[in-house]
Image 1: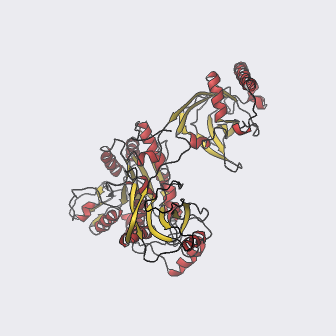
Image 2: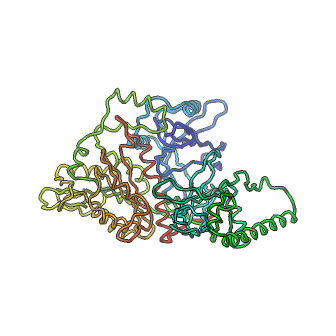
Image 3: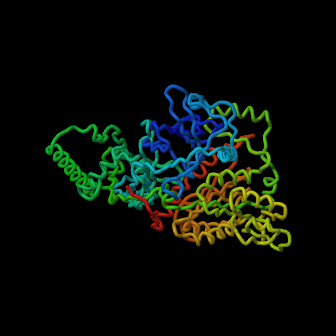
Length: 626
């Protein structure tokens, strides 16, 4: 009998593999195969995968005995990320036996007990936990097959336009934009799925076509209610509501198949109860009922098209003064196209795409206090914060007293990304300093150069996250910081180090590599125009840029870099691949909310990687798009 357990880092969800206090809970159990030393279990164990969390699974094989306690035959602890990135169809791992064997009753009691006491483990503790079994006796080999279970890999490409919208602006026009929302699981509120661009000074906008995953749009339920709302953008006041319509993907698809166009009436107060019934709620009626439904749909479409021509012939002034629900305009869907696309797991799993971690650290004079100020906490503060852990779902991490905030961030991000990089292409850079014997300040230098006594290293990459921290520590001893003021050869420019990383990624544009580049800084950049140009170039490369602000600087300029509207001398970014976060938003006086920090910062990396792969038409090998 095989049992699968996972440690839980969310107190509100006991089915989530993660890490907390060395406590594991059971997530699945196979059937018992009798009288066999090479069992082949058929029961599948589902596990929720989250890229932005460290998820440790424990596999245990037990000998079932009716008359006595079950006996533990072997155990295996493994990170879920390592399973997903394994290049073999069948993962073979050795089972080991701990020195003290628990009984099955002890396993059950540990699984059902609540997670109490201290919750002060970080990623280093988890690695020690995984390494603990390497010295134990080998008792067998466990073969694991892992695959993704997903309701749909479909995307839908849509294009919206509107006709005869009412006037909302003083000069007789509107600035409309559109929002698509879906009902929350509890049905109490709406969740935004897509927001279009704003078309200025028009009553007949044609928005750009867009692509959205069916899973994100309606959770793969084509009968789930969707609300499409149209608003008028205002610069100085709140946006005006124009109208909305409640529909479903099934309704849109039926109209589109019938006439090649979906026409919807915008209303001020759309009827929430006029929902389309799912197949389970449909009455059994033979061909006559099906034909009747088709006739009604055709008649409805004909009436809508007639109303379109009628509304176009009406005087705009009369439409503006009439507040009737029927005078909010029409919404047209001119394109509705489905396509099968690969998922993030397809790329990093069978596709073999690696994620590489790179970081650049601010070495200017303003950042020096953060290089030498160690993160620490007192015992009294630790106990009080531990008590508060039970009241929140955020993991409070007591930071190692021997590291500073830069080392902590390197370790937090690196440990999550390390399982996805089997080649070991880690790199750590610095900017805003020079080494002894160098005449000028550099704003893009490899920190391995500090290890070699001021000489450029032959190999620019580090072997692991620990090697990144070692190179950073060694470089501090011979580093001479520059002023962060905006003057000649000084300042804090971001463009040189971004361009340096872009140059490195030019050699990895085959769909098998993707980079996560993190800039750790204590202040804003001083080269706005050059940084924007560098970001535009980076948006076409296989890289995501994450900027983390350390300290209490306002960081106003950095907040503007995050978003897909970044322009540089008339050029727009190809995709949104820049994010900014401030460390103090994830800190208390004694702790760092490490779990919330990494979850928030890394949660958009899969989406950004998929956008790049789709823009280059890279399809992972050995992937079934079903």
